Each structure stands twice: as C-alpha cells, then as structure tokens.
Length: 71
Image (cartoon, rainbow, N blue to C red; front, side, top):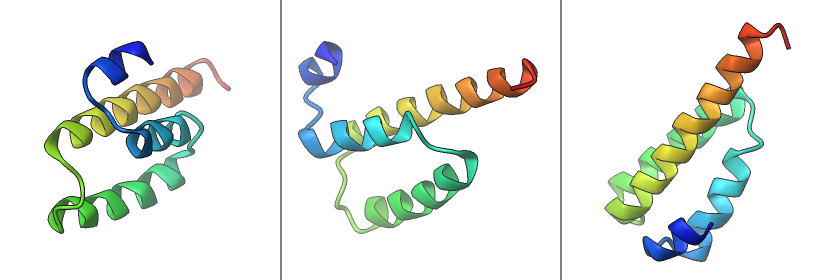
C-alpha cells in the first residue's frame, strides 16, 4: 500500500484495487467494461489506469494459478 500512496494513487483507486483483489472472472469482465467507459470519458487519469491495470493482471494471475492447482 505504501508504494501505491507514493505513486499518487488516490483513495478511490485504492478502494477499487481492494475490490479487484476479491473479484471473480465474471466480475472482472464487468469491471473492465465500466472502467473503459470511465477512461473514454476522461474520468480516470492515466496513472490511475496503470494502477488498476496492474491490480487486474495480478488478480488474473492468481485466478489462473488457482485453476492450475485444481482449486
């Protein structure tokens, strides 16, 4: 969390990252659609998009690993 704060990620993005860490694949798909809309409308700054992207990639890797393990 300290790295995120140092990078200037605001509380709203921090809350979204916490949500991402608990999402299922279906929830991630819906989330990505909403985020794309917000990016298009200019509601999310590029730095925030990068933080969300990193969190999504991390979560997808965790899901993939769990599936490989048979979980």
